[in-house]
Amino acid sequence: MAWQDLFSALALVLIIEGIMPFISPDALRNTYKRITEMDDRTVRASGLVSMMIGVLLLTFVR
Image (cartoon, rainbow, N blue to C red; front, side, top):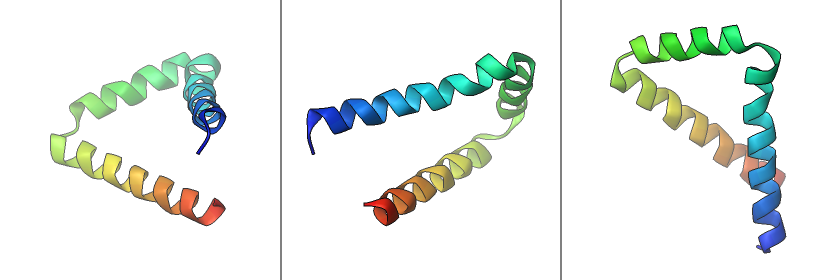
């Protein structure tokens, strides 16, 4: 893997993460508020599922 690939991936993450606050800051705040009200187990499970989907997608694409 080249450094260019790593920085390209990081740039895409920043772009994607910035879409929601740019388009709808109120919805983002409401989402964060709901997340803070969830128990740790639910948040961890959501994170695990998200990572697994990302790994599967990356494996499929590569």
